[in-house]
Image (cartoon, rainbow, N blue to C red):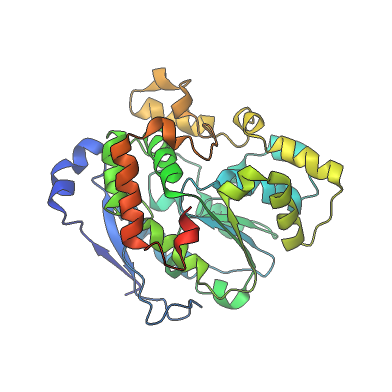
Length: 335
């Protein structure tokens, strides 16, 4: 059996999951991981928090065809995924800003695991879209390495991984879960759940560590914080990885397009329609124009300072130290 589905037995979770709209959460263990080229001795992947709906698609993803000219982006959620998708797609498609504006990012770069988390309105079916897409395909996933297609490790198309610091992820993921996953709890409840590894795609630290230890020659690793600090350098890194050459002027034009004010106003990447659908489903349509309900909210590296209590900041820091001691070689991944 490739996947095992394990009920979450935590008594606090069981007592309160319904009020937060988490009844479908489940731990999923992948037993088919022998071919993952990971440099961790005696590695056994931990169960991952997903939805019961994952049973619909898990095996299909594991067995899907992988093509040499595919482009894959994988992240833990809210790590700069959409931003990097837009960057990669434009670099690989001759900076075709018009097409990027006319065609939504979800159509250009389908998120294959989404229907494993929630029911989608017809005809929205990103996994089917990815399977039927003509080459070259651009594919997004938040899955840890063990859950990705077995063929990925032999075909070895280009793979980009993006990481982001845990406090920024926690705040952004909370707002994202409210607007897109109809989460009904408080920020404090969400962050406590994240610390307990009970939000989708957790465990978080393992996600970053496993990708950092992949022996995969065709992978580029990026950091959200580095991209924010020097976007033109990150663009040049991506260009080099994809064997593309652009002038300084073109790189400046792309950096301007990827600025957060521009991204927030860009209908093809801000998923407004999808947020509107979710808010209507949960009788919150009046919140549509609130900043925290926007898919692209702030894009800051330290916005968490304004939103997290000192108690939560310390709790997240303690959690990271427990998982990754200060002298660990992995500590720099979480700065």
